[in-house]
Each structure stands twice: as C-alpha cells, then as structure tokens.
Image 1 (cartoon, rainbow, N blue to C red):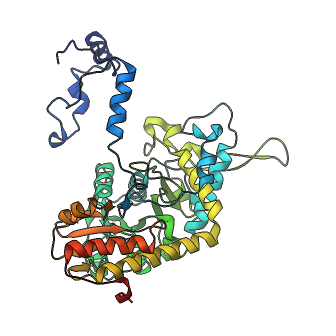
Image 2: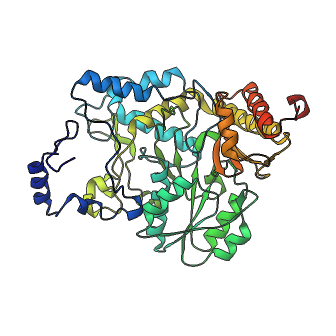
Image 3: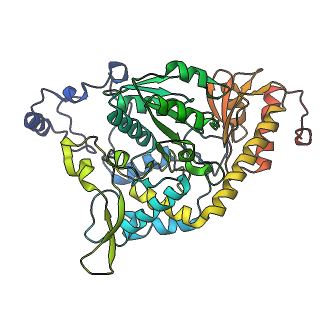
Length: 463
C-alpha cells in the first residue's frame, strides 16, 4: 500500500485531504493523535484485510460470509456470562422501542419529543423504586462508565485520591474503570475472603486519604456481598463514600445496597430487557439519594416533572441542567458524551411489565437455578466450587482432572458453551431464567464425561 492509496470505504484518505486536515489542527502526522495510546497496544503492521471490493454486491456477499460464522445463544446451549447475559426479552419490549419516535432516541434533541422525555422519566422512577434510591440518571454509555463516574464523583466530593476495591471485579471492568479515573484516583484492590470482602483487610487499608470504598455485588464470580452494612459503617467512619457496582436484576428479592448504607449505586441495565446481540446492548445507571451534594456531582442528564406557563399543566424536562457537561462544555466537572437513551426506554418497558411481583419471582428463580447448578456440578468427582458464598446467576468451578480450556473445547463439540475460562483450572458458569433444569443436567453430564469419565453421578444423587 502506498501513501497515494485512496480507500474506497474510508473517507478523507486522499493525501491532499489528509494533509489539509492535519494542517487545520496543527498536527505533524496522524501519529500525533495516538500519543496517549501505550506502545504495547499499538499495531505496527497493516491490517490483514482483503483487497477492497468495488461492487456493492461483492462486498455484501463477503460480509455475509463472515457473519455466517457466528453462532448465537439461540443455536447453542450457553452458560456464558461475565457481563453480558442471556435473559429472556418479552416481545413487547422490542415492539415499543422499534416505534419511530423512540428508535432514534440517542442523545440529541428532536424537533418534536413524542413522549421520549416522559418515557425516560418513567424509567428513572422505576429504577429508583427497584434500587430504593431517589435519583437515577438517564442511561450512560455502559455500566463500566457508570461505575467509573460514581468513583469520580466520590473523588471530587472528598478531595481524596485512593479507592479501595473490596470485591472480585470483572477484569475488563477493572481495566476500564482504572483507565477512566487514573488522572485523579488510584484504585487499590483488596484481597477477598471466601469470595466476598475481607473486613479485616478493609480495616487495615482504610485511612483519611480514601475517597471511596468500591464493592461489586454480585462480584465477577457472582458472589453476593452479605456484609455491606458493616462495610458501609467502616467506610463512613473514615470519611469515605460507598460506591456499589451491581446488576439490578436481583433486587426483586435481594435487599438493595442503598438500604445497607451505599451512597452511590451504579451498574448496567443489560439484564433488564436488553438482548445480548453479539456483545450486548449495554447502558449504565447511576443512583443516589436526594442529597444535593451527590445530585450536583452527577454529570449526566436527569429528567423530571416541570410546570408550564399554563396553570395545571406540566411537562417533562431536564433537572439541574446547568451542572452537566452539556451546559459547561470543556469547563464541566466530567464529560459525558454517548448516551443510551433507547436502552433506558427498553428497561422501563421491561420493569413496568414485570412489576414488583414479577421481579421478586425472577430473583427467586435465579437464586434457585444457581443453587441447583452448583449442587449438580459440585457432585461430580473432579469438580469443586470456587467458594461457599451466596451466588446469584454466576459461580466458579475448579476442575481437578482437566485444563479448563480442554473442557471447553470438548463441550463445544457437543454444542455447549460451558462457561468462561478464568484460569488454567477454573471456569465461570452462568445460568439465567432461560436456563432450564434439564439444560443444567445436560451440562453436568457432559462435564462429568470429560472430567471424570467413570462417573455415573445422576441428578437424583444431588439431593
């Protein structure tokens, strides 16, 4: 490829156009734009891509061939989780968000609202009820950003730099959060005990320089933190803010973190009526109490009821808009760009359809399915549970007789995705509401065959 090459799919690749753009911004070369990217992440070679296809039909055929290699969780029995979950999405959710007045609800202002602000206000209200919080934002880009923003809020409020991460955090999330806050905060991971927070380790790490105590519940391994109140009391005594990263799917049956002392609750709403879609429809939430100190640190939009000039009429619009980066631009406390308003509407439809009783039944089902899966797999010789904590939806198993990757390869040949490889001998297994007892039995039988071929353990022996 020469410098004079003009790519048919990528605009502005003509040399003269590229040079004009560089001159306009005062850059010497394109490399200047990547100065902050670490060298070990840089690709110092050309991409291995086919030659450009000039005809549209040829390009379409090529792309369809690539997509044909995909296998969705509707085609395979999947026990994959780790942040993106295969929950059932009621048909009405898709029907509502496909409406034209919602489908383009991204971040900008439409000429006519058609109820988008009210729909998002209803979503915020339903999330606030589920989380036992007062204020919930319009969705941010994803749950990673939401948790990072919660920690950044704590740093601004306390003027401190240290963050203590008490729980096992999804590695990808930890990496994103650390990168997001690294200019102002230092994240220190504290060792866990039995899958949950170690309070003795917390006490040793706390100090007057700690901005936030960060708890993930359920954690990366699905462990539910049962001593959150004690953690909150210790953190507050040290002047730190308690930030919880969570998945709201279980709070129809579990006690919300806010009722155990959490100051800021964050997470992702993918489990609430959003499809996996080969990577997930993700959107983040930030929830706080009705306290101006916290509300005014939230950088993202809030919608609320507003009165009009006509007595008795009201509408829906921004609350405290002047605190946002949309209002302050480069002078804002924190920049919030890409929003995910459409996914907020989807989650609002899902929550209104489920209702409190539906969410309670859903949470109970997840707890029961998780426990059944743990019992079935732990009954197999050569398989041990990773810990004894209470788990929701996910848990780890240790394979004594076979490397985890070999077990995955063997079960894939049978159309089963048994879980995510954590290390050489550990698998992270996930069950959801679409995972039946017979699905779990099939996984157990298949694992028994590769881990302990002589085993004749059956489900009747689990009880």
